[in-house]
Length: 288
Ligand SMILES: [Zn+2]
Image 1 (cartoon, rainbow, N blue to C red):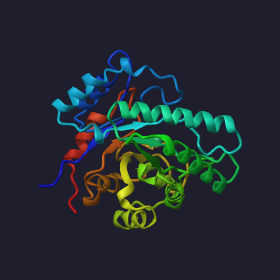
Image 2: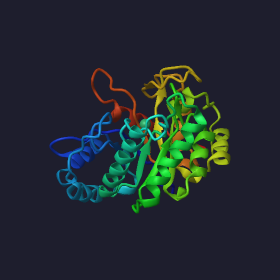
Image 3: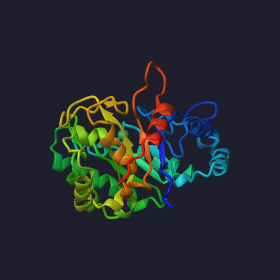
């Protein structure tokens, strides 16, 4: 029997129910995995772990047969390990990331998605080496089992991680790289210029350059922009330029069955579209 598809979305995390609230939101949408930020994505203000209802949440997950290992935490956007021009920002970024690793571990979650960083005009190679330095500093001392999943980026501004080669460079140069994985965002790789019409070729390239065993999370989003636009604006499933079939192949491809797929599609008229999109995806399996 084929394993069940792991399908979820970004859900909110906040007062008063925190982790329990996130889980209930995901269950409401018919999801068996989900992603959350442990506080606002734009800052590092974080509610103490004692208030996050972690034990109650873990009980609830157990009741619904959801393994916390398949869940995903997204690190805040303010982290930039690629900044070689401002040592304070680099140090601050490492502190925030370490704190987020500790929090992720407290939720018994294993996947922590991280935007690799921006080179802030110092040049891609210098930025990539700075990211390697930052990850080495953290992974040399951190003893948790959290996997930092480097996200593939659209290449907006000075974003790094816009090619499989850049992601591979980081992984290959980090010492404890058994603690590194990858989050593939379909919108981002499309905007970065990858061809999503031929998933077998794409996965073959990914495997040769990075290694498919590194792939731990998929962000399933359509794109509002053209292939190669380097823009990064997510569209709802089937409402963008990637197209329904090309997206559904990422859900049902036999090599990707065990990987959590997370929707980060935009709200429609102020409401989350996830229940309908999850239902649509489940009703439209693709046979390989
Ligand atoms: Zn992201």
